[in-house]
Amino acid sequence: MSTFLTIAMPKGRIFEEAADLMRKAGYQLPEEFDDSRKLILDIEEANMRFILAKPMDVVTYVEHGVADIGIAGKDVMMEENRDVYEVLDLKISECYLAVAGLPTMEIRDVAPKVATKYPNVASSYFREQGEQVEIIKLNGSIELAPLIGLADRIVDIVSTGQTLKENGLVEMERIADITSRLIVNPVSYRVKDQVIDELVEKLSKVIG
Image (cartoon, rainbow, N blue to C red; front, side):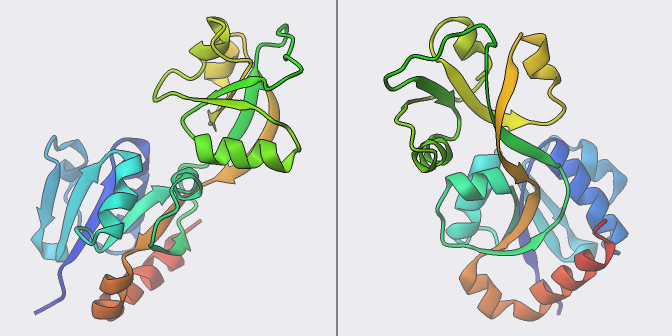
C-alpha cells in the first residue's frame, strides 16, 4: 500500500497555483477540487489528504505533525520561527515585502509608528537599518493605518502595487522577495522520506 500524505495548503491564489503545479507534476487532482468548500479533501487516487487553512496556520499544522507537508509563503516562514524543514522553492505566488506610506506624511523623528501583519520581520528590518520604531500589529487592511493617522508607515506584501496606489500610498523600501515554499515536518521526513522525496523531485521538474 502506498504511503498516504497529508498536505496543508492555504486557500486562495496559492492553493490554485499549487494545485496546477501538482497536476503538471503528474498528480491526479480532480477539477472540482479547486471549487470545493470543504476544509479537508481526500484524494484517494493520489494517496493524499489536503487540509485547507489560513496561510499563517499552515506552518503550525506542519510543525505539530497533523500535516506531513505544507505550502507556505516565505513571508510566513520569515515571521514564524517554526521547527519545519523548508525543502523547495515552488516559485509561485510571487510578491514582495515592502515599506510604504503617504508621500506627504512627515515621519516623526523619535520612534515612528509602523503598522504590519509581520511584527517580527518589521522589527528585525528596522533594527538592521539602525532605526528605532514602534510596531503596531494589525491583521487586515494595513493600508488603512496611515490614512487614519494610526501609523507613519506600513510593512506589507505587495503584488502589483495597485492597492497602494488606490489608497494614495507609495512604496519606500523593498525588504524581501517572496514566493511559496514546500515545507516538511521533521518526523514525517524520517518516516515518509521516499514519498516526500518523490514529490519534491516531480515538482522540481515542472517549476518554472
